[in-house]
Amino acid sequence: MQNECTFVLLGATGDLAKRKLIPAIYKLVADKMISKFVLVGAALSDTTIEQVLSDGKKFITGIDEQVWQKITQAAYYHQMDFHDDSAYAPFYELLQRVEQKHGLFGNRIYYLAVMPQHFAFLTRNLAQCCIVRQRDDHGNEPWSRIVYEKPFGYDLVSAQEINDSIAQVYDEKQVYRIDHYLGKELVSNIALARFTNRVFEPLWNNEHIESVQIVLSEKIGIEGRGEFYDACGALKDVVQNHMLQILSLIAMEPPEMLTAKQVRDAKAQVLKDVNVDNVILGQYKGYLQEANVNKDSQTETFAALKLTVDNQRWQGVPFYLKTGKYLKNKEASVHIKFKMVKCLLDWCPADSNYLTIKIQPDEGIYLDLNVKKPGVNNQVTPVTMDLCHSSIFGPNTPEAYETLLADVIKGDQCAFVRSDEIILSWKIIEQVQQFEKKLYAYEKGGDGPAQVKQLDSEREITWKA
Ligand code: BG6
Image 1 (tube, protein in one colour):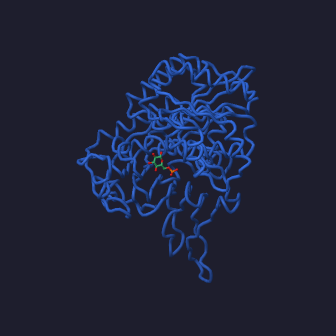
Image 2 (spheres, helix red, strand yellow):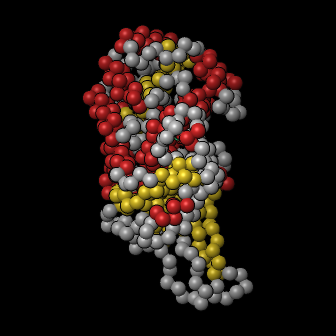
Image 3 (cartoon, rainbow, N blue to C red):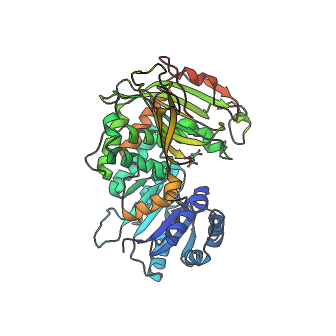
């Protein structure tokens, strides 16, 4: 009975539901990850389940009509105003009715695919109306799990308020804060690669590593999300969550076991130790003309940060983070630069070894090595040893949301962000905001503002991406 459940999609008419969640549910059904299910969507719009599903269907490639039919036969829509207290009782009745009709046991995933200003309110109302039970038994009781989409708040204060509202009514074991980067194959590979291969851990410290770059570059702009983006900017949109999560996986101390508790303890400790050393912010030219953006907006669409992790392992190792909209390339990657070797040749290696974890595109792990130049004695040339993920494992790795929903069904919280991690990462963003707010303009399609070269006053950075 563990792999049967009701998906309750709050915000069923939104972008996330159609682009990611309905396709992810389809895949779970197609891959037989879920044996029996019901999908109940709810939102304010006066629409139908047929419309909600057909909006989502457009984002599924190679659809199997038989599988799709299974979904259409088990899907329902309920129009409701989340802020109307009286709307919850009929909604609850509907849930019970359809679960009974489809012979379901009552396991439920409540997915809050709504903006964070609704989180605290929904949290309380769902609990008060007994929709989400206040414990998560792994025994004979059906479970209720509640999923919060990002962004989790707008700042430290709002995130704390949401966390408090959750803590009042649910057990943290029921709570799944999404960061879809944690569902990406190569991000979930970081801890496994680090801790299951003897070759990495002895080198994973300031004796051997010179610096770490974490890059999340995007070719696209704000894609019609002017109002949302203008209120948050790059720091809150991707640094607070995706990039700091990647950093914490790279920098964490080896946990005793790779369990959710121990991994999240280790990541939280990194976030406690992070300090902000420098910040460069930018805005692409033309941003102020975007729809629903303030005409004198000071929102950053580019951010580069120099951070330190102040513990014994990482003392003196800068962590450089860089992200931006409308850059030359789409790439998410981590580049670990090792220190130069002592030169034993007349022609010394030109550059250090780099270990690159390519999250996207061309997912894989790449190691830059020096090897002998053919036909020439005593000279080396750099080559890249690559573990191209798709060539080895095939092109069909699951999408992040599919993986994450499967984890919620299994009750595995490892790839979800715990309440303390959320608070600690917002504190880092607060530190960043204390820096002088200079905003450098940059051209679309380039590398971001030229000033990014001055991010580290102590050394020149060669950005790998
Ligand atoms: C989202 C941000 O969290 O991540 C978007 O809100 C960004 O602005 C997106 O484009 C990037 O995710 P991905 O999976 O496309 O790299």
